[in-house]
Image (cartoon, rainbow over all chains, first blue to last red; front, side, top):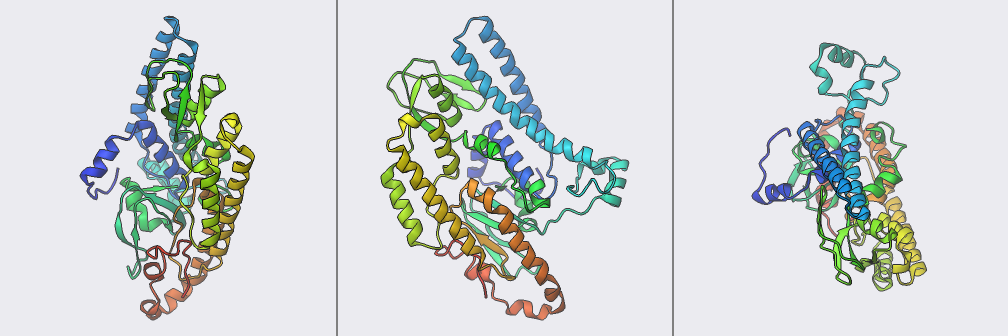
Length: 187
Length: 216
């Protein structure tokens, strides 16, 4: 979670009521729709993996103690769905950090990654080969809560009022901070 | 990711869209007893014969496949409601009627897995197809009004599948204007303040016109 514009109590509560699987789904949607690599949700993914592991053990118990196969299969399906979301979250992150090590020409699809700047090699490769992500591109987004007026261009001449639940197509850079702090979701 | 660097492609595959929609809640009527389920995605049940309960769509489909429940089609999937929606879609060329964000995927899943629970399924299916067509046409004609001055487009009530399908065209159209327009903006910055702040006046704020890609 990056820049900290404050959450209202309401938003905080709705966030607390949101399951980890739901959060994984949001992170995945955002990552897929964003023109740049977003912060990897490591604690969320770690937490979910622990939950999945616990569930694996529970399912094993169920099977051993002769539970109704229907119930076992439902728990299994639920776990598979969570696992898939975990995998997708890790994949988009891994794919791009691995791809970033490829020579030019293989990189047309790449976005800039903060993560790769952590090591010198990555940072060198990035600075020399990887095109800047196009933050000017347009994205589809939605917010659960009303954000209020946000500037649409550098001169801040034009503003838009983001109304809760409505769908907008905006330039990514104008809503980037809200995507980073979770107030706006890309769809 | 891919969808942004290559504006030709959609961001989500059909299977991914379906996966996302499968978490939507739906009412089922079980024909068996089952204790509450404490799943990673949430707690559901208890399940009692003839007592309706809410479950995610994936669970409804799983139970239905095993003959353990009937599915109650959502209220918006009735002929009456869909006919109203279709009429309103036709009557208001700049607005989309409110439908569930995943209405296309939900209806497809139900057509595939719970067809015997949907009264007048052929009619329902054709109404939904007509609604889709009208809505797509609206997006297309809305795009024709996009200009270089368009900084924001509001597409209130556009659904997930519709977003995924129109995304490449919308993004490409907006981008091409943006690129085209940039040098002019740099050369003649004086013009900037005189430009109508359409996003404010006629853009996203103008709730009366929702396919808002407004022009000077």
